[in-house]
Length: 295
Picture 1 (tube, helix red, strand yellow):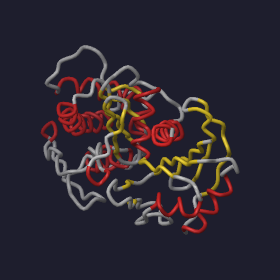
Picture 2: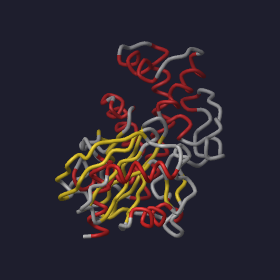
Picture 3: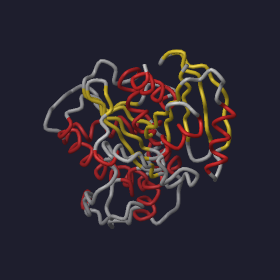
Picture 4: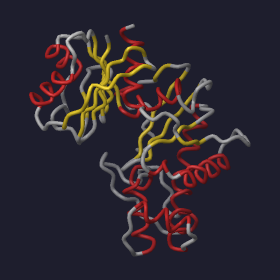
């Protein structure tokens, strides 16, 4: 029996995977701050008959040495997590980035079903992504394949407006991650309008036709659509499922889709950037990867 875990900054969720499409919830627990507590939490959710474990986690695993980088998860960051958990749990363990699990779910069971190349994007607090080719995740050097949110790529004068290259948590400046997520659009709005507002308030005002919010969203679209179109020109994805808090705004996703398709080499009248379709991408993505890894 395969057991899957979805691990974020504050919660651990677990399910028994009777099949990739047949999950039975096993409960949840708070995410501890120390590794010993983390192992104890997993053991508390792990049924006795579990033969293997697959984990979706908010961190990046280096496929060469197995070390995980997870800035918001001090209990695990820097560890060879799969090896450490295999020793602690006594079972084989597969671990994947949450964005990778998201795109695998969308490619095989969601909005990307039937497409050969699928690039999934996360527009949450920040920006993430993952790539599936022919039904398989692309890991890449260092485990960073699909991370389109980083690199000094932003236009400093989108639509003729001055926007500074903001510092990013990765150490660079001018990354898509600095403006593309919920915190980013709030920073952008603060710079352009001089006022504070949450991402939800900005988007609500934009849909209502409020001018300052319209300027922010127009600028956001210009900043984000160009780098995303470049990525799609490179990887040749024919669909881009979008998940995360910002992507729950369907009008924003539709506007991003139009802006991206205007910038692509391949012209298409069909939607390309679309809302994610599956309600449980973390647990299901881990289950799909676990079944591929362990059978």
